[in-house]
Amino acid sequence: MATSGARGGRLGGLGQWWGVLAGALLVAAWVNSAAGPALVITLSALVVLWSFFQAPVTCNAPVRGRADGCRNNASGLLLGCHIRQHRWQKLKMLIVRRQVRAFCAGLFSDGKATVVTLAGAGSFISGLVALVPGVVVH
Image (cartoon, rainbow, N blue to C red; front, side, top):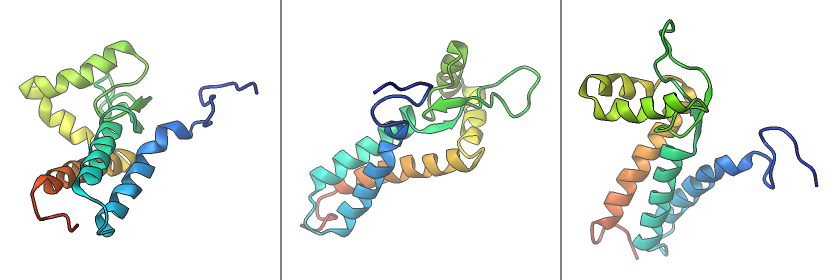
């Protein structure tokens, strides 16, 4: 089967959305009392990794002459777009103290970024809560 374009491959572009399925399974694991803490922690870690490194969001790296930053598609909240310099700019924003505020503002810049940010934060909290003994009902 021949595929063309940026969305080629076996899953036809749906491969970047596996974190949504992991998030749905995480919610189901919290609802289902038979799911143990190991499953909740594993699913939480998967959703956090997806949010940071693979979720489809807008780049928003600082660009000279544009107040809203780069508008290219990016992979994850921590990585930039296909421009190599933007990848490093986004990671550098977390380290340089003056730029942390700009990075955090970019987390809620549009609808996709807000949903991915909330999914990542909720999954991180979910994993921490699952580590506390007695919170997850067996």
